[in-house]
Length: 137
Image (cartoon, rainbow, N blue to C red; front, side, top):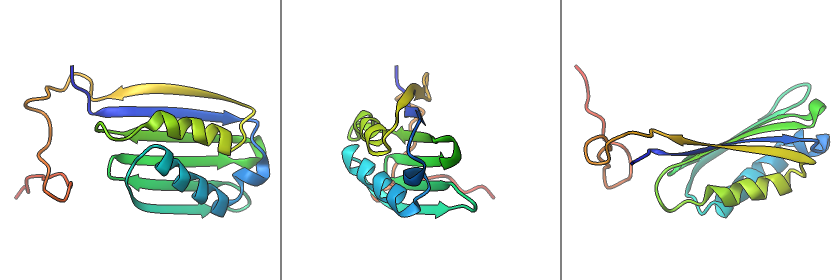
């Protein structure tokens, strides 16, 4: 049976607050995670919030990686969603658990689009890799 991709929902606990509150560091770690996943980075952004917390996002040709942090709780929520055969998201999961120095963590795996018919439901791709969508009038 065909699926559209796989999501990893990662929760990190007991992380050092100074790591979780550093947008430059979190941005660097998410960029490194892209490499560990053997994924293709299209765009990356990170933002620090006041009084604390960071959100970072990596747009991938294969989908995305996002990190949201709560330094005051030592907690980070990470989503890694990839499709296709090239990416290895499990490697990015392992890397981020270590790189953000989690004392404990959980990882949930969710298959996306299970039940799609591989022959009729897959979108057609342009040579650029962008999904071709019909324009409605």
